[in-house]
Image 1 (tube, each protein chain N blue to C red):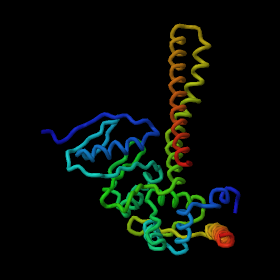
Image 2: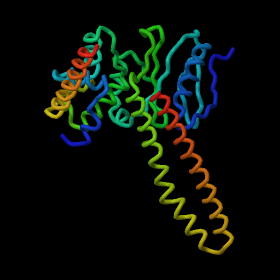
Image 3: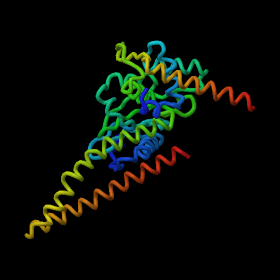
Image 4: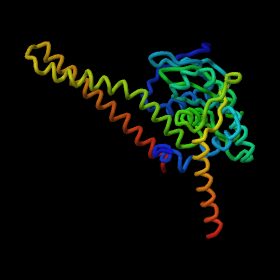
Length: 104
Length: 182
């Protein structure tokens, strides 16, 4: 993983994290919006401008890849690099969580 | 009674927030935005007053892949209206929202949009600045004839205008960035 990717994506925004998390299964942008809504019980609703910008940026940086198009919706899937970034983030959040619980 | 009207408004490059608010206020007072045409003519139609949120995006990649771009907004309940000088216009009724909604949900993506605007708008200006204005001030000022003196003045005038514009856009960027960070 090169320095640029690390600098931009570690740590990443909550939106970015959820997008990568969801794209471990193939999905289009709106599918991710719905999934995140369900996972967070309506707590996080990703807006379309943010979603579109994030997906194109992540595709350009090779974190996700285009799979196919279905009814004008682009379907994506996470790449090996995307998984590495997600893994780093998960470990960071885990560490954060454990530290928080310890000192609380 | 007339049921359409046109207003001229000029919003400079970084003032899309002002423009969104302007369209929202018009709709609230019973004038529905129909379209905007060059150089800044805003056409309205009389309607029932309603709180409708207008939002502008600036995304050249979206414009290049219009169908799927618009589809994503439509899926999220935003109606696509038109494009105008690089901006795409969307609207959604406040009644259809759960709380407040915008087309961007975090500061990182708001800042990304600001960067796209600056890149899309400043790059052509910078090219003009360095390849046309600066060389011409140098070239014209070296030739000693009345016409070249006039041209020198013209290009110096342009230089001042450009520097003012850069300063203005830079100031807005800085202000916007600060408002997001704090």
